[in-house]
Length: 137
Image 1 (cartoon, rainbow, N blue to C red):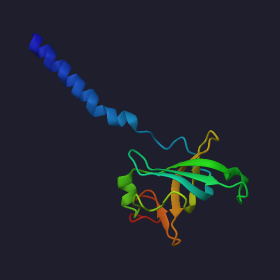
Image 2 (cartoon, helix red, strand yellow; image 1 turned 180 degrees about the horizontal axis):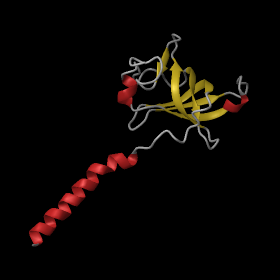
Image 3 (cartoon, rainbow, N blue to C red; image 1 turned 120 degrees about the vertical axis):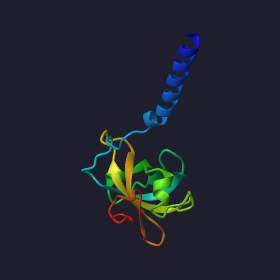
Image 4 (cartoon, rainbow, N blue to C red; image 1 turned 180 degrees about the vertical axis):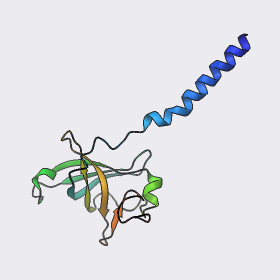
């Protein structure tokens, strides 16, 4: 009886451990899909890490759209998905001038969801293979 209880407990622990990655994932529902911002400024950080790539952009006070001024954290897809779109950990470097297009946070915070970025050659790099312009679209 005790052995059976230990096996059941071990099974429960293993099931919980397998479910943990799913709990860590979130949707992009926090972003306002009805709005599209263009952030043009200096790249301060480029974090090529799971579960999502993050770009931090400092948009200067003289930006064309005053709503975009400030320091913004832009969230992309996973490195795996973005790599399929042509991104690498070296696509951008800190200090680069970048243009990023995406959806701002619904709550008005300084964050957004990456739709695409423009590289130094003028090529649009999307964040998801299912987005317009990607291999699947």
